[in-house]
Length: 117
Image 1: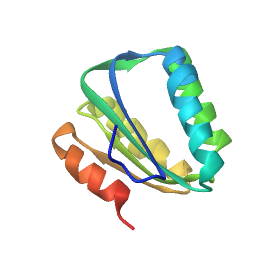
Image 2: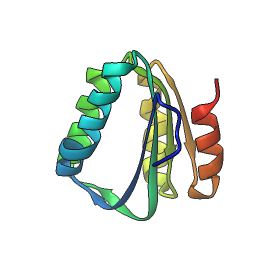
Image 3: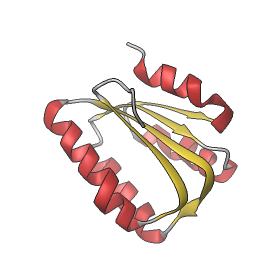
């Protein structure tokens, strides 16, 4: 995603998200952002063609989240998939930063919130 503040990573996922997507895109983006910022924000948008995560992606997501648990200042999860939205709400309490879940119709609200001071 473009046009976000410097401390924000924004991605849109379509199709099936794989471990390779994490290893080649998301993990390097997080590691690069953490070189310049102690705390980062993340907007994770599951687009209209999103079909889910493979097992390796779910594992990589958990490891990434835990490895940098104190670095997540805010996370906005944007999805029309109630199953994933519920999981994020449930497990979001384990992360010390703020987490909000939005529907795809609320993407602009999520972008606005992730960039607020």
